[in-house]
Image (cartoon, rainbow, N blue to C red; front, side):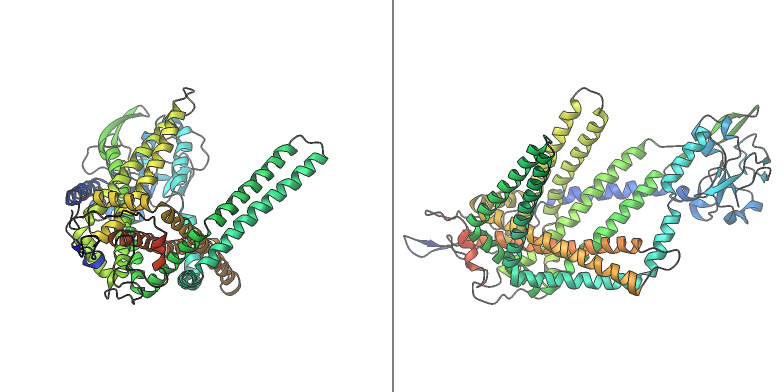
Length: 623
C-alpha cells in the first residue's frame, strides 16, 4: 500500500484506492441473497393475501351469501340470480334483517345481512334474493323491517336499539367511519392547491438558504444557539427564584423546592458555559467542517436528487405494505353454519378467519421494517459515496473535481457492490426493533398484575432501545467506511470504531455541532413555512363554505417536515462522512491529512496524534 523511501521513514501513498477509485467487490453477498429470499417470500405471501383477501369488504360489507354489496366483476362477481345482477350496483348497502335483541352473538349479526339499495324504514318490506347454489336453507323470501335504520359506512344501523350487538357494531364502524372527515379534508386541500404549491417552493427555498447560511455563518449560528440556551436556563432560574420569594412571602413550605430548582438551573447554566469555553476550539473546528459539508452540497447540486429518489421508493414501499395489510386483514373463508331463528334452523355463510392471517401480519410488519430501513440505509450509503468522491478528488488547496453525475455513479456503485452491506445493517436494526416491540407487548400484558415483572420488562425494553441506538450509530459509521474503502460491513464497523476511538473528541463535537445546526434549521424552516402558509390561507386564499384551513395546514406541515428532513439528513450525512474522511485521511498519511480543502485542512489536526504512528497494511479489497 505504500513504498519505502528510506530506512528511517515510511511514507504511505494514497491507498490502492479510496472513494471513487476504491477497488470494490460485492460485499456481504450472503445477506443480499437472504434479503432477496425474504422479498420472494413476501411476494408469495402478498399473492396469497390477494387471492383470499378483499379490502372492499371493509367499505361495502358482505351479505349472507358472501357477496360484496354493490360490486361486480372479477372476484367481486355476485353469486345471485341473473334477475338481480342488473340492479346489483345499486344495492351497495348492507341491512341486517333479524331482531338484534334476539341474537346473542356479534358474528351472527354481521354474517346474516342482505344487500339493499337503501336502508328500510320500520314496516317496509325487504325482498330477499335467493341463493342460486341452494347451499343456504330456510331463508325467507321477504322480511318486514321491525326497526328504522340509517346508513353508516354502508351498513344499516337501527336508529333506536340499545342491544349489545348494535353497540358493538357501532363501535366497530366508528373506527372506519372517516368518510365525512376525509371528504372535508380532501375538499379543503383541493381548494388550497395554490397555497400548497407556494408552501413547497418556500420550503425548498428556505432549505437551500439554510445550507448557504451554514456554509458562511455556521459558527455565528452555533454561538447564537449557545447564547439562547444559556439565556433560557438563566431566565428559567430567575423565574423560579422569584416564584420561591412569592411562596416564602405566603409562608408556603414549597418555596425551598422552587429555590432549589432555581439554583439547579443556574448551576447547569454555569457548567454549560464552562464546557463551551473549554471546548471553544473544538466547537470552532466543528463549525468549520459543517461549513465544508454545506459547501460540498452546494458545489454538487445534483446530490439533491438522491433524497427525492429514495423518498419516492420509500413511499412506494409504504403503499405496498398498507395494501398488503388490507388484503391480509380481509382474508377469510366462508362455510355454511346453522342458526336458530323463529323456530327454524337458518343456514348461511359465516366468515372464518384463517389461522395464518396472524403470521402474515407479523411477517408484513417485519418485512416492512426491514425494507424501509434497507432503503434509508442505501440512500445514506449513496450520499456517503458522493461525499467521499468529492473529498478525495483533490488534495489540500486544490479545487475539488468530483465526477460528473456523482449521485448516479454512487447509486450504480451501491447497487452493484454494497446492497448486501445495507441488507445486514438494516437486518440488525430490524431484529432489535422486533425484540423491543415484543418486550413492550410483554410489559403491557404484565402491567397491573402486581408481580413486579412489568418493571423488569420495562427495564429490558429500555436496554434494548439503548442497544438499538448504539447499533444504529455504528452501522451508519460502517456505511461511511464502506463508501470510503469499499470493505464489508464487519470490517467497516471495526475500522469505524478504531477511528472514532482515536478521534473521539472531534467526532463528538462535530455530532453536537451538527445537531445544533439541524435543530435550528428544522425549527426555522417549518415555522416560517407554516406562518406564511397561514397568512396566505387567511388573506389571499380564504376557506370556502364546507372547507377549513386546518386540513391544508396539516398537509403543508407534513410535506414541509419531509422536505426539511431530507435536506438536514443529507447535510448531517455529508458532515459525518467528511469527519471520517478527515480521520481516515490522516490515518493513511502518518497523521497528516492530504485532502480536504484550504478552509478545513486543519480539522484533521484536532485528531489525536500518536508519536510512534505506523499504519498497518490494509487489504483495501477485503470483502
